[in-house]
Image 1 (cartoon, rainbow, N blue to C red):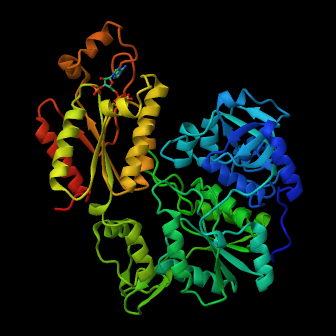
Image 2: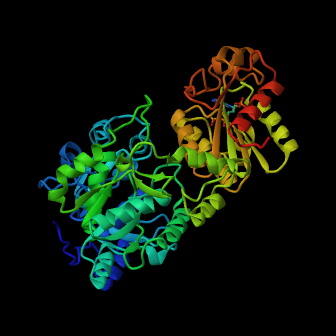
Image 3: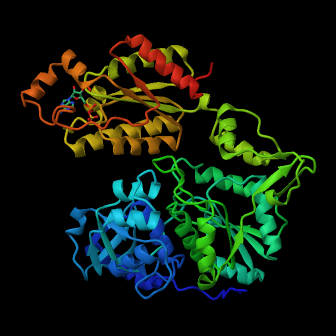
Amino acid sequence: MHLPNLAPIPELYVSYDSAQKLKAEAGDLVSHDLTPRQTCDLELLMNGGFFPLKGFLGREDYNGVVENMRLADGTLWPMPITLDVSEAFAEKVSEGQDIALRDQEGVILATMTVTDIWTPDKAREAEKVFGADDSAHPAVNYLHNQAGKVYLGGPVTGIQQPIHYDFRARRDTPNELRAYFRKLGWRKIVAFQTRNPLHRAHQELTFRAAKEAEANLLIHPVVGLTKPGDVDHFTRVRCYEAVLDQYPAATTTMSLLNLAMRMAGPREAVWHGLIRKNHGVTHFIVGRDHAGPGKNSAGEDFYGPYDAQELFRAHQDEMGIEMVDFKHMVYVQERAQYEPADEIEEGVTVLNISGTELRRRLQEGLEIPEWFSFPEVVTELRRTRPPRARQGFTVFFTGFSGSGKSTIANALMVKLMEMGGRPVTLLDGDIVRKNLSSELGFSKEHRDLNIRRIGYVASEITKNGGIAICAPIAPYATTRRAVREEIEAYGAFCEIHVATSLEECERRDRKGLYKLAREGKIKEFTGISDPYDEPQNPELRLDTENVDVDNCAHQVLLKLESMGLIAA
Ligand code: PPS
């Protein structure tokens, strides 16, 4: 049995006086503006959450971690914690140089002495760390489509913590939690990691886990970055606070962890365990499909359901934290209580509501029974996720120039306005290029920027309960995916491929642009001299060659209705 050593864990911060001095001197350093994920990583590096790391991984440590989950000195560490930057930024830095690490508002958080600069083999990283070089995995998608091409490694000198204005009293560094456990005399602590709202089954299983281990319980939810599409952390924390009242007083506490998850299943479980160990915890609950990323592009699971438990079990002695199996709890109607699924005799009525079913009920405003969740939790979820027919959403048309996107989008807008209920904004290609993107041309970079701007505006409209209709060419699948993810955080995204063939668009040539493109008078013209990635799984594909505009717009309406976005 492992008893925690609750002595303070080393942090990377310097003293207050040194920090003031460093801040003043850092004005002369090359500055890197941290991405949200890097800010989360830096916070846990500095406060000891990622102990024994002393900074972003250098090349040798990175190779060891990728290949066999070990730093160059053999220490177990399953996740590459890397500082990715653009090639342009990397050119400004040489090995041995100090750089300033700043948050998105330019506040300096740390300095880093760059010891290594290299271009990683990202395909290898994806294969080894995440199990497949498949962009359906959120972290692989991030690696290829968001992370910079070059990695910088080196030790970090901490100046100050990233500033959080929300739930300040609920955020604790590893040393703050250690001190809290010391103060309360807690010696055995079971931690529960979560990125989802807690319902009665979770409350039961965590309570049982703590009881069986004769330990106190730490609910340790992740509030940094989780899986795209998750319930936002503001809502979740309000839900957790409601659930906290359901535990016997003085046995349980909750603390928020500003971790950027990778959804790396087995490796992630081991990583989570090490992080909890650093927070003074002795036991860690690992469930079925821990930190699972969902399905791969062939529709299969990335990892086996118990891979995470196996990998954790194999390393728990070395880690110094013990795994507690997650019991699958189900509700037994006859006894009106939750029980572990594997302990239930035949013939009793077992009730269960899956995550998908819960989302459906929330979306459609249907009943969520009291045996499933706590009324306070359901009220919070309903406040954040009103039925889909009252949420904002985005309709995103994509297709060749002259495919009919704008015409159908206009017809759809009018039909939606006729129905009323929500404000409608049309972000047509031409309108956007005039008002939002007037300085942009048609290079890959400019098209990306254009679509990202549209995505940003549409996500704000969606967030605020309106309907955004977008109708750009949007030729690149990765950019469309990024926009989808941004919007799906707030409401539905309905991608519509206006599938008019290039031949037909060219035959129509309403604006005479295809002729000019063929003559080489317009460069980088989509379909002629620039690529178009056909959508693989759009919500709807429209054939405009044999169908009139009114009917196309009507098909979109029917689609929206089937998605629950417009009430009958
Ligand atoms: S993109 O790729 O999504 O940023 O394009 P978008 O903002 O929709 O702009 C497309 C309209 O610009 C005109 N145009 C061109 N299109 C494609 N390639 C090149 N090189 C180009 N140059 C000008 C064209 O009229 C498009 O309008 P639509 O409404 O699609 O016909």
